[in-house]
Length: 309
Image (spheres, helix red, strand yellow):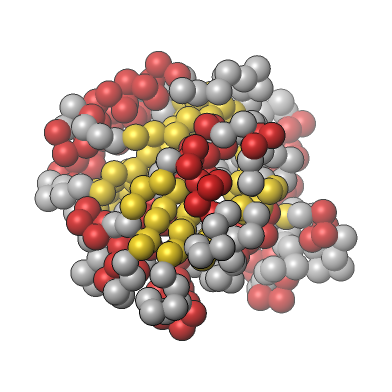
């Protein structure tokens, strides 16, 4: 179910499914056209291992797309997490071909046969509150910085491809008998559990549907989630009610900009933030300033510039 909300008219659906799609290349153009016909914007990744996407648009169009995807028996069990946005959070529609629908970079990982045990949102609190369970946030460091589950470990990884190295250095099958992992929508933690299974871990769990499913299912007063959840679109974050947060992203590095960032001497409005200030070239800085000028000119004309939030 989608939480009823007065805060937006655009339905956002995040979905993925690990499944053997040997015809994924042939599906791209047809899927791209279908999304455009339904008035949807967003990004969908296709690979031999399955599909991963987030799209937004009219509710009827979003639901029709999911119906069409599920007509393929290999995607019949495709699940989606829904939320609302006050305006369209994407600029364009892109269907891309990839080697992996989420890049881990480890050969031989197959979540279709190796994944750990799914844990329903209703049962997640009890699991992660146990003393014998090690709880790992598999997301990137900047995502964890904005919010996470109470007591969860932050691996401090810059990207998901860094997670295997962290796991090899910090986790031990003989010591860590129970490991629970989570991510935004479920796809990264599902692949992470397959990695740990390959490494010899026996009792590995992951949050079914990820944080978004938990926020949609669990009442805030019973929640162990703290902070906001980063999402990969122009909403930047959503709160426990799946409402858009008040953060923006840095135009240079696309990382979320916090109040602490804005107070830094390395923050420059419309240009950079402390995370990218030292590596910004003069050419890139001038390009960003020109982009900011174009956004302001478009606003004066009453138009929406493609690069504006």
